[in-house]
Length: 219
Length: 219
DNA sequence: AATAAGATTTAGACTAGGCTAAATATTGTT
DNA sequence: AACAATATTTAGCCTAGTCTAAATCTTATT
Image 1 (cartoon, rainbow over the protein chains, first blue to last red):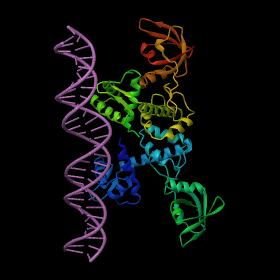
Image 2 (cartoon, chains in turn orange, green, yellow, red):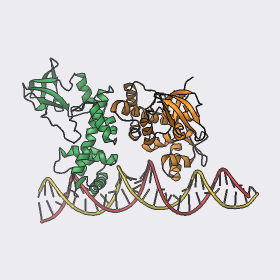
Image 3 (cartoon, rainbow over the protein chains, first blue to last red):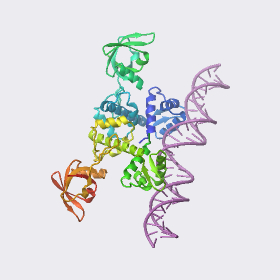
Image 4 (cartoon, helix red, strand yellow):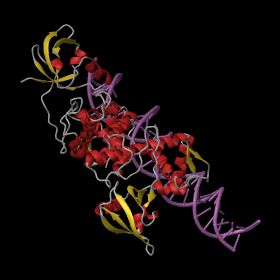
């Protein structure tokens, strides 16, 4: 079993490997963990001793197979608990992150699997992020940023890139929720804002918004 | 907010105060916490600095009002999660303790209250122990040990004193579950065993068993 | 190729929580 | 009242995880 801190490092490395496939730098990890580079170096050595990461001084860090498996297990638990909080306990999608950060460290395989079953094996968490199955497989779907769609294209809103309270509240206010159909009516090249049709209404959204909304394009 | 270790100490002191009302001794607490007396002394000083306990050297320790409130909150969470695990996730009553020990430290008042609501405000956990309400009030009911009932008396099985896997499995095997009616048919004074009627069958149980089963006597 | 800037690691210190061994206080028994 | 047994506390050390400051490595620029 791994400590809370070890699990959080593994999770952070997992997320950063998307951006830095060749190895996650100490500084990037320090920023993600909201700690100092020296602390990261210490912890990364410990993780390396346990064969959870591959680490070469000054060259950054990568997850080992076991490290990756552990990180995915933590992410699986995080997202399942988020579904539980929203679906069963009346939380809204902007309230669940901090609580799931605690719940994701509860150690019991049976608990995770029974929770998954109880929730009906959900495929995505309340923010549209995919939930890995018990074997650690994500079903990845072709999603794009709304900002990258062409004029005239349409699709389904499937996730958010920014999960901050502020952004989620903005979406709530404008009745933009996961599963909704969205069509790009017009692109304004000057400020990169978009005119979209959603809920049968036209809505103008800024680049800031469209860069943080994932869409599964039709066809 | 208090640390995991602090919460566990408060909980242990709370439980021991039932037996040692005049102050819980360092050694008793050390045994309960499965640690050394010297470690207990250190921690008790810290709790005292935070006004969670009243402590006088060599004289034992007692919970302050705030300490008691905190302990009860932890116990409330523990028991609610046990209900959740048994009622919603198909756990049996002998499997839930260790997981609830982890879940009881999750910090979110809203989570606790919503969980309570979701479960229908249960009054007792799967072992028959009362669940305090959000204000920290236990509803105490008149329960007795089965061993202390007279021949001919009858009642309802409402709880267990020993929550060990072994004991709970024994009860399962003999179809003794909470809510069942039990009548004392005969007391054997020689070995203090009892002949009881339960499930319309006669069953002989030893003193060891009858000393660990709580009964709410009829009238 | 040299060097300055930036990134990373090392050294040494700190806190929480725990341990062992030694010192001290309390209690029970004569 | 004294002393032995037991309980408790103190002193000093340990590990995990963190920090600051100093040292060292890498990289970008000339």
